[in-house]
Amino acid sequence: MAITQTGARLSSSEVAPEQPLASLADDVRTGLLSRPRWLSPKYFYDDRGSALFEAICATPEYYPSRTEAALLEAHGQEIIEHAAPDHMLELGSGSSRKTRHLLDACDALDQSCQYWPFDVSAQMMLDAGAQLVADYDWLALHALIGDYTGGLTNVPLPEDGRRLIVFLGGTLGNFEPGEARAMLEQIAGLMRGDDQLLLGVDRVKDTATLEAAYDDAEGVTADFNRNVLRVLNRELEADFPVDDYRHRALFDRDKARIEMRLGAGHAHRVTLATLDTAIDIDAGEEIVTEFSHKFTPDTLAALLESAGLAMDRHFEAEGGAYSLVLARRA
Ligand code: AVJ
Image (tube, protein in one colour):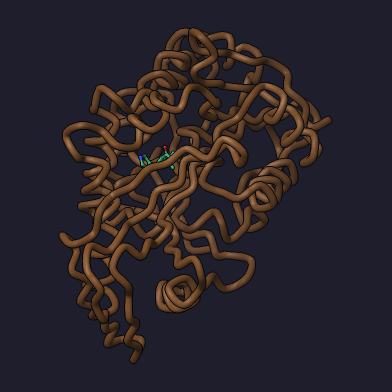
């Protein structure tokens, strides 16, 4: 394991996937040639896409992010008291903005814990990390660079100490049910004894609220959705007519998920030079770009149970808008 020491309390290392992950090229070839056509939401997040996601979180319609932050602020101390972590591993930590509520709670409770953010963007983690170690003088931060969908067995957590695994933002909702269970099983595989998982998920609610959250009036989400085509145009030398695509966000109540799609305004042929492929797209044809699953207390408990986990504490936003749960191995 290559460890880069960037300061006494700030270091980083790369986490290798268990098996080689599919490349962008392979994923796009598979998805675009399937029916319905699909693209993985993980390709939204180039620099522009990450900035657009931050902007989504600031729209009045997108309640999940601020609702989760409020729950972390209100219950941070109870969470840290209950989990008493020596090591906090966060999957998809991004800029670690919401995690500060947990670090504040550690601070208030004199629980000195090491923080292990895990994300693909080394730059974002190290920038945020430098600020974090400056703000919390007891904090040691070890940034883990990699794609956590490649598995967690190579995460270099020390054997000793109690673990709190943090998985926020409703990101689990991006996975299809079987994948979500597999992801939770991976997490459960890192947990022993009293170790805890802190999981944030969005809840099933009325269709209007859900669809508005994924189709804000300002059009930020629409721009975010179309951004995946810009990524493909750049990375695969493609020529998607980005502005010709219409953003759609529909709640499927049977599957309890928002589906984001991009619909072609006109029939066209797209060429992906890097893939040596051309695809004819019909007028109105749609590409599925994201699923965002929503849960009820029952479906959440059942999913946890299927992965060998059990709910220890459940913090709900007003009206059951959002859930934060602490779970342990069953
Ligand atoms: C970051 C995956 C949790 O599904 O709500 C926000 C992404 N997509 N608006 C979500 C997203 C459109 C977000 N997650």
